[in-house]
Amino acid sequence: MSSANWYKYSSPATFYSLAGRMIPWFYAAAAVLSVIGLYIGFVLAPTDFQQGESYRIIFIHVPASWMSMFIYVVMAVWAAFGLAFNTRLSFMMMSALAPTGAMLTFVALWTGALWGKPTWGAWWVWDARLTSELILFFLYIGFMALQAAIDDPRRADRAGALIALVGVINVPIIYFSVRWWNTLHQGASVSVNKAPSMATIMLTGMLVMAFAVWMYAIAAALSRARSIILERERNSQWVAQLLESKE
Amino acid sequence: MNWNSWSEFFHMGGYGLYVWGSYAVTFALIVGEVLLLRVRRKQALKMALRTVKYGKVENNEIAT
Image (cartoon, rainbow over all chains, first blue to last red; front, side):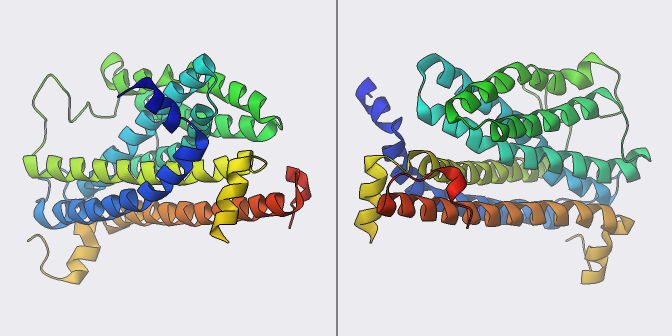
C-alpha cells in the first residue's frame, strides 16, 4: 500500500463515510458474538467445582477488564500520533475512545465487586489490582473532564494527549500488579508463556465474549468519532457538500 | 445442560443477585451508551445543517 492511500484515509472526510459503512457490521459482529459467548458461558460451560455458579461473572468481568486497559493503550497511541504528525483525525479518535473505555472500566470494577463479595467476602479491598484499575477509571474521567473544560479544541487535544500518554504507565502496573505484589486478586488466567489455568470450554466462552466487547468498542468509538468530526468540521466545504447531497 | 428449570437458572445456585447484578448493569450501560451516541449524532447533524444554511455558528449559540 502506498503512503498516498494512508493520507487519504487519515482525512476526516474519507474516514467519515468509511466509518459510516463499517459501524453496522461491527455492531452486528458484537451481537452475534455475544449470543454465542453467552450460550457457551451459561449453557455449555459447567458449574465451577470451587466457586459454583458465581464464576459465570468471568464472561463479562475479564473481557471488560482487558478492553478497559487495551482502549487506554490505543488512546495513548492516537495521542502520540496526533502530537507527532499533528493529524486531526488522531486526536478525534483519541477523544472518541475515552467514554467507552470509562464505561468498560466501570463494568470491570462493578462486576469485580459483585464477584468479590461471594468469593472473598468483601465488595472492595485496597489491593494493588483493584486500586490500579480504579486509578484507570479516574484517568478516563480526568481525560474527559479536562477536554470538556477547555474551549479551544486544539488546546483540549494537546492537554488530553498529555494525560493519555502519562497515564498509560498505569496499564502495565494494572496488568502485572498480581505478580509484583501479594494481592487478593487471582493471577492471570491466560498468559502467553503457560497453559491457561481454566477449562477449555470456559476459556472459549471468555475469549468469544472478549471479541464481542472488542467489536462493540470499535462500533461505539467509530460512531462517536463521526459525531466529533461533524461537530468540529461543520464549517468546512466537505460537510456542506455531504449534507446538501443528502437533501 | 446445567439447568433443569428457569427458576433454577435465575437462582444461579444461590448467586443470582451477583451474577444477574453484573449482567444487568453491564447491559444497561451498553444500551445507555448506544442511546447517548444516537442523541449526540442527531445533535451534531442538526448543528452542521444549521451551519450549512446560516453560515458559521458558535457552539454556545446552539442551546436548543
